[in-house]
Length: 157
Image (cartoon, rainbow, N blue to C red; front, side, top):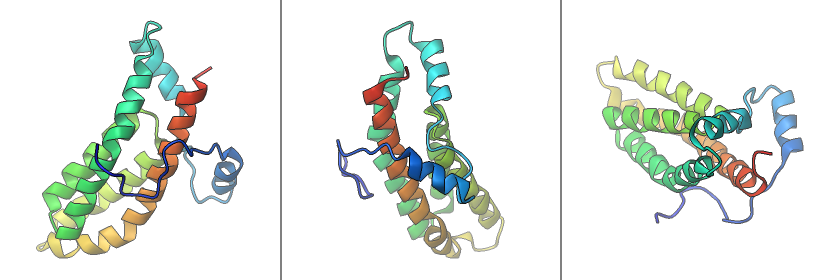
C-alpha cells in the first residue's frame, strides 16, 4: 500500500459536520464533502444486501493516494496529458462515491488544464496550476476520506 500524500491518520476520522456546515454557510464550499444519497443509490443498485458499496468506498480510499500522486507529479513536471488523465481519473472516481466537493475542485482544475492545453506551451503553466489547486484538493481529499470512513463505520442507516 502506498503512503498517503496528505496529513492523515487512519482511524482518527472526525465527523465535524458543524465545521463542515459552517464552511458551507460562509460560501467557501457549496457542495457537501460526501453526498450519502449517492452511496445509498449505489447500495440500492449494486448490493442486494451484500455491502458492495463498502467495498467500492474502501477501494476508493486505498486508491486515492496513487491518484493524488499521479496528479501532483504530472502538474509539477509540466506533463499536460498526464495532468488531464490524472484529474479526469480523480473526478470520475470521486463522483462514484458521492464526494461532491472534491469532484467540483477536480472539475475546476480540469477546466484550467484544458485551457492550458490550448496554449502554445502548456507545460510552463502547470506548476502555477499546481500551486493554485493542489493544496486545496489535498485538504479536501483528506476531509473526504475522514467522512467516508465515518460513513463506513456508521453505515448508511
